[in-house]
Image 1 (cartoon, each protein chain N blue to C red):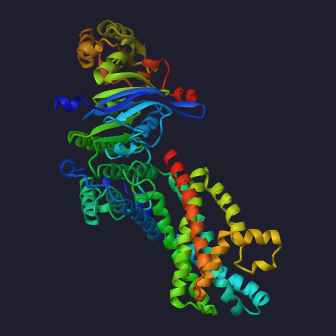
Image 2 (tube, helix red, strand yellow):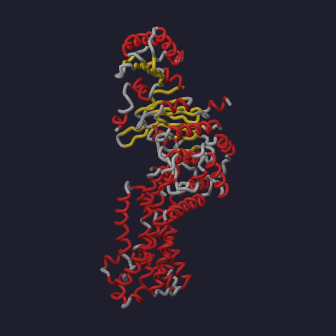
Length: 331
Length: 282
């Protein structure tokens, strides 16, 4: 088991892909341990999809090397294809066909007989809650249904490595939760998952290691804990009952948290950004202590929330620029 | 139809984690399908698309009927004395012309399909690489067969009487469909090479009109100026229509059949690899 987890599912060195004058991927180094969920986090246009496409043998790298389970993605593309599955950002199923026809088509292409493909299709549709929609054309599916069918198609033959390119973008919270459940079930059976996402929250829930990617480069990599410690643990948002108490509350917070406190436009609201130090003894613990001190000082707090660092905050901390200017620079 | 489009996820049964886990464990990996089996499966996809969108058969039914009627009555009296006389000469030729013209839709469908996400999945599958392209052409071969049968039926109603009987007619159609399959690799190339559907259509027209009209489909090339004869007599479409005409008339035009098959082979050998190169690089 320890030998297994020590193996790398993906290893890249100096991976580069240019489109015209744009370096979409500009020297990406990744090491993804087998049997885990690995998150690739970054804004639109950061190079996530291009990286995934190179790893899934759909695009040829212009420079650098990439190995999947020790196989070169260019020279041994066919062996790589035999072990990976891809669920693209845009539904990778045929919209003109029904859900069942899609699964039978792919099942047959993966070597199942007519009956075998149909049987597996039926079981997958049932497991994904799509049995009723089996005979309907995919173009009439909702976004959540499409995404489920897409993932079902990717695990027709249980892959050793599954690429999920922004699997929850555009989904409602309920569908998103269900996709997360599927990812957990898949990885629990030993499949390695490479997940790209724009949401830190998603990477946080699913991935054990995360690479933050911006303008085609990996700007930070590590476990969730390491990454959070490097960006700070998030923010505490407070709403007081009495606006007159705000200056005193800010002072108490500053002392208790050792962090910068910002007065919001709303006269009763305060935001304190937790520093990296908060990561050590827990953001919640620190916030609880601060609340206690506020209460002891006689300040009434009406509303309190502890927010994770947003992707914007991560980017600001790591790059000094927000997520929004990434695309302009790339273009 | 519109009610199904609005079906939300709230109506969906939940994902069953247990049965999913069982499926993942139970999933054995069967051996890869053969090149033929993979190609046929992609051909089946094309047939399913016809089933779901039968309107796409318009170009292999209405268009060929129009071609037969139009040219039989337009030229029949002037060129052969009567439409009934003329159709004996015209039908095999117009059959060849219409089917070869219809092949150009292959490029358009490749071009629109390749932009969709499903193509990424096909390209990441461990199957024989040309299978998706061969699958298109197999589906199209079915369309060519439908067009041939439709035109032949109209021809028979108008008085066409093939001397070769059923055997000759079948041999002619088989040669035509085989040639069209080979010729279509030009279109898969353009479908992958050009960026928009419109440019594919534009380039296809530029190729297909001179190629089909500058042939012996309508008249004997001997009335044409020398330089044009040189082109027409060596055009693959001329060889093919002579071969099909001969087969349907009950002759055995070995030379013309050989020329047609030779051209077909050349198209596959030249444009097949170019198509696959573009497909792999896309």
